[in-house]
Image (cartoon, rainbow over all chains, first blue to last red; front, side, top):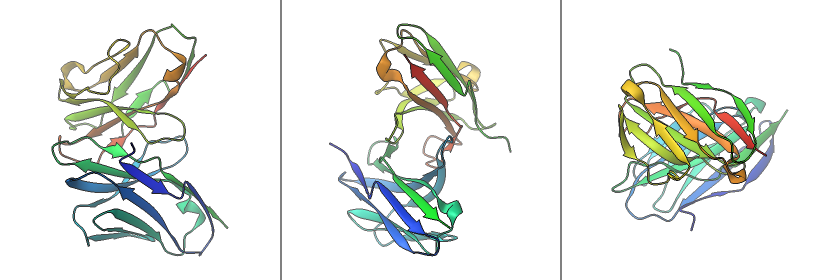
Length: 110
Length: 114
């Protein structure tokens, strides 16, 4: 059973069209939730760490938020260079291991 | 600062053959990870080293996969013999500490088993 579920699997936006990506998790004792970005042919790149419900982090056009059951990655006025796969990652109490979701592939058209 | 280096970038082998991947982490990073990423999925941890000791290898198929990290720096991941289902991208990552969730990934090695 998947512990991390991301939706949608793929998302196409026009440049400037804001939207949100969803990550829901089922583990108890969440230690931390992280967002990574992965470009084709490259390894994932760290974006954010969130530790507690209500926490928010921002970086350029991206804002990540966390509730007790899910996280959202909000993309405001995206640009074509924001096109990538965004991976949601968790760790749970007692383990330092990162558990990755399958990702949301974002395409931003000019 | 140099990133995580991996080689080769691509490898095609036949099933039952052997293959090895090499990783050089970021200088000063004590923790090294090997992940397997199958197409359309997120990376899955295979093994984690702290310096040259194994921290977690619970998801490493030990009957065919092996890994070592000599002198706590470079690491090698080996598959012997390979199966068709081993076709994937093998990612190496490193971090400063064991509880450092900001991991730095290399570009990966794309393995195709025919």
